[in-house]
Length: 346
Image (spheres, rainbow, N blue to C red):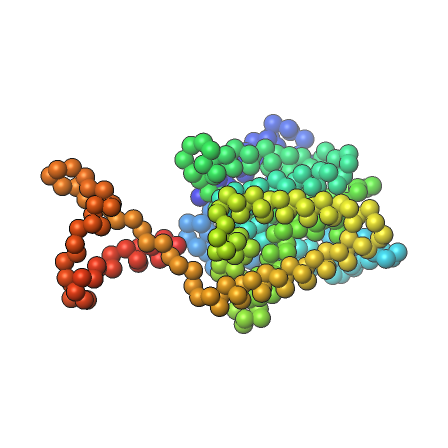
């Protein structure tokens, strides 16, 4: 679980080399460092949801107090400017915490959270046309730090490492604040408040769908389960790499769709995202219910351990070929020596 810490250290190193950190960037990296430490502690000791939410809220409010950046408008919708007034800061807290936890929840298969972050970074830069360098410097550093992590996480080089909560929370946090900064505080920026949703479309849609389903089932929206889109695709028979490629392509399509609706009538991107949310939530919940009705997914039995004998080491197939001695549980029945280990590993 060192991938996130390694990537964040890479971002910090790049910021030091760049040497032009403004107040917003410095405060962002400082509060992100706190989240990285808390995430590492959560990876090690499994902190409570309340503890994590309190730290995340404190980090967001610190950013607002020091930089003054927050969501104060939804932009021009249907010919009218939607100012939020006193509701801006609470919405900022919800938006940032929601997105950082969305990336945390999407970190379910190798490479997914990291590649989705790269898609979001690419979409943000493409939306702007001419990127505002002070506003995207942290994103460029984050992208550069995620590339070597993904190479190791996907097993291309070295021993496998994982992002962990320390990484997934920081990735979502940096993306959330960069999007808010560009859409709210950078003059003449092409990225509107609604465009932000399309840049991180898949994590947002999946998190909304999962939380709606959990609330309808009378469960805590923060209680983990195997109902995310990648879990359902794996259970449908797709392999991890196929699932990864399919979801990355879906995220790219969502970003491109947002760019298309951005150029249409004012408010069309909001209506399109609202319709897409309804379709996504309904479809994924129906798939979940259908898979639940089919019963629990079968668990693969672990391979028997090789047996060392005076004549060498027997293979797994030869071990299974030997007749088993009768047990008290039943004649000819093998002792259940592996299923619990398999369940615990899952």
